Image (cartoon, rainbow over all chains, first blue to last red; front, side, top):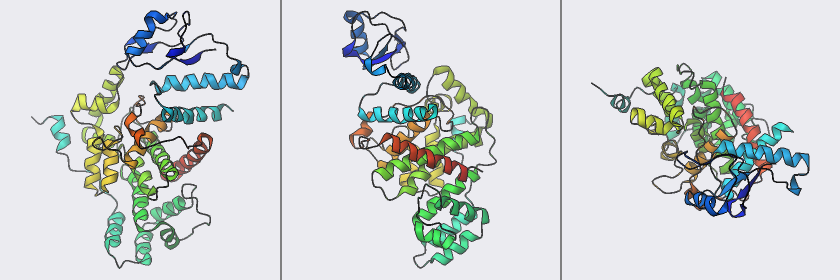
Length: 106
Length: 281
């Protein structure tokens, strides 16, 4: 399952799930890139990217089907918004939109 | 030759509000006015009276008892709130004959505007604000500049939508690039032409930035946040797919940390459905 992580959590060989762009919509790292902390972290920090989505992470919290659905929906919302959440208030906005998606599914 | 920008800037033929609204404003400015006098004015417009009662009895107001007469509605609302609610319920009608294009369908446009009004109102309620009518009205009016663009330019306005799509930018930026002026500035002119309160006019002019001359303002900030949420929720269509990033400076004086997400969503969803049903006929 894809998972959103803070850039400080990136480890070598994590695979990028989404293409990462800067504020000018220029591609910084393409989807599918195998990450290398030594080189890629600097690019992300330079452009103020706080979090990314990586592939194939198995998370105990996602064992439940509904959690998996929620996580998929969350990623859809993140993609739709197209901007990084920089604080708790931004997260609340995402959560409200996510709640509407969850309500529609359930 | 007159440029498009000059044509827009010099345009003064803004839509006029219904006569009943101006009669009401005159009556409300008279300190000795009575509920009966106001009620008589409103009652001359049957459609408006009917809509007003539906608004007062909707979940948006949440009154514990059903209000069946205009007198009672005025009693519950108060004069200032009444004026804004009347304006809220008439502003959509004012543009009912406007011809837009496939880039901006009027019904989905109003659904977006109503969503912004309902969400900003809910945010104000959470913060204990009393002038909730201003939030609903400001949300509904926040994008009227786009309609004025259509009124002045007709399908020439489509150039801004095309520019925004090609360049993946927001509509206001596209309008500035193509015409040298954006819909918020035009909307501000309309608001002044209609003698709307300064606060409401500012929410139209500054809703994209979320600040008034770099200063926070609760109404403007709430419209800014509600606009982002309405787009994220896909409630109506504002004419542009870009969802603006919240201006981080607004959070210096505004916090959503006490907001219960489930309750908030349930409430705004109910209010949104009801408001659309009442206001879009």
